[in-house]
Amino acid sequence: MVGLLNKGQEWSSCQVYYAAREKAMGNGRVYHLAAILRRKGRVVRVGINSSKTHPRFTRTYPDGTIASHMHAEMDALRFSQPGDTLEVMRFKKRNCDFAMAKPCSFCMSHIRDAGIKIIRYTNPEGVWEEMIV
Image 1 (cartoon, rainbow, N blue to C red):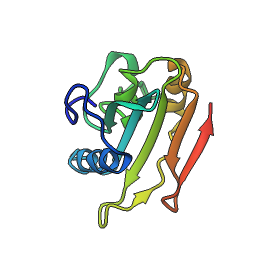
Image 2 (cartoon, rainbow, N blue to C red; image 1 turned 60 degrees about the vertical axis):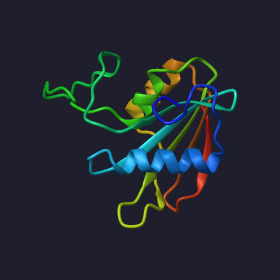
Image 3 (cartoon, rainbow, N blue to C red; image 1 turned 90 degrees about the vertical axis):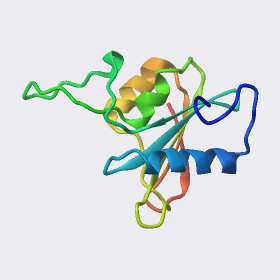
Image 4 (spheres, rainbow, N blue to C red; image 1 turned 45 degrees about the vertical axis):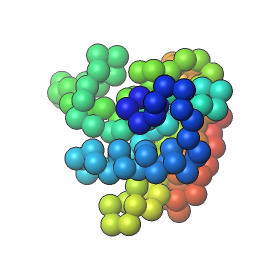
């Protein structure tokens, strides 16, 4: 996990979710989301929603304006390979509980293009759900 794990180091799921939460809560945005990209069960990248942009994920709106932010899924997908798994979670501000984090249609198109076949996300009750793409 870039920036959170040393090379060759493995963490438990609880440690990964805690690190993802800390990273997402410090993103300076209104919404606090994290996306964990896994390859064969190992964490490759933790992405967060941010003000960063990337040419691969340019979003132009009908009025011609261009988006100036990157969703957590897009941040993680920059490091993806076909067959990877994506876990997306959203954290509430007041207590850091899980909230709805189902990927939007824009992210879903990039997830399909990346060859991701399984997505896990937190639903409105904060419970994990799984989607086969």
